[in-house]
Image (tube, rainbow, N blue to C red; front, top):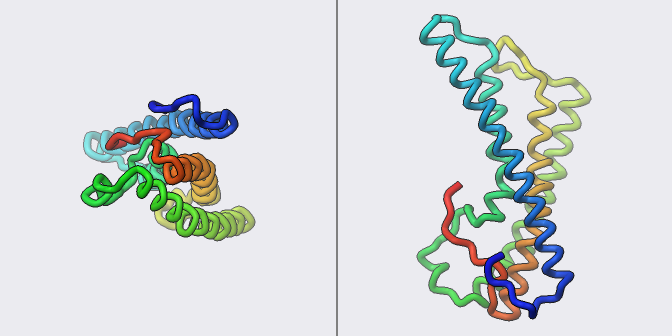
Length: 187
């Protein structure tokens, strides 16, 4: 957090630091999913084109790894400011207006949508677990509940980071001071 002064309540700063630190750590751990993803794709390409022996598992493994990496990395992207925003208008707004827009957006759209998605995806995961659902995409037919568990887990991680972002936006709206300036980042 680049521009923190001594004016913020210590409990507020501590909560933001704890949540942002948690998101940084989980984002780093989740980024390691790219290693087995690259290895699986490289193995499949090598097996398919050099040895004319495609695998039955690579398709399922790669879409599950990529989907997991994408979903679980969403909280990290939110923390780093790598989400989509209409910069043409956004950059012209005052810090207070940005804070108010973000605060209202988090309260009206972000949290209700994610809570709803969390509940629905938890039911989907639980059902897949109960019936031991398998994929019918390939002859390998892996179980799907671990992959379906990624969605409620991603929602939970986003909700946690959303609390930090909401606190920052409320502070911006009230004081006109950014606790954390997010540069344009591409992850």
